[in-house]
Image 1 (cartoon, one colour):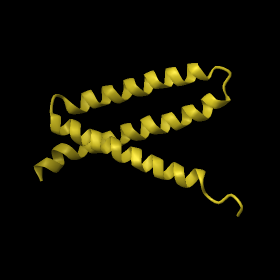
Image 2 (cartoon, one colour; image 1 turned 90 degrees about the vertical axis):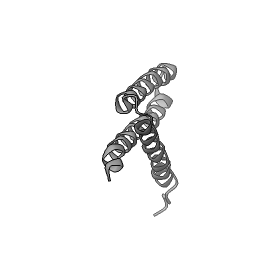
Image 3 (tube, one colour; image 1 turned 30 degrees about the vertical axis):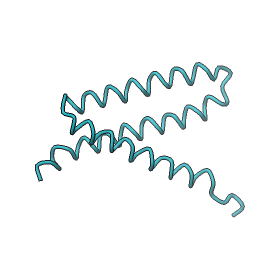
Image 4 (tube, helix red, strand yellow; image 1 turned 60 degrees about the horizontal axis):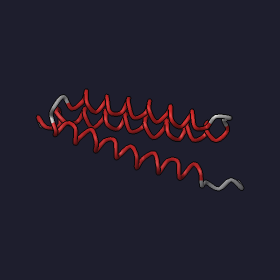
Length: 96
């Protein structure tokens, strides 16, 4: 019970960080492909996404490796969820 109280919030924050990271990546690709300066979009987005995510990992873990692993697990769960949602969105039948 104590472990859930200790690791649960870290996993939820990891999922939120993952949703931010991969959602922002998808948004950047959409904007960058239509931009006159796509390199600027991609480089700036990479720096911001990576900075926010690594800062979040650092703050959540606070030198507890168990919290860091829970946060990374939530991050990876968000990656799988975003891939699934976008796959369904991109490949849905448009002929209806």
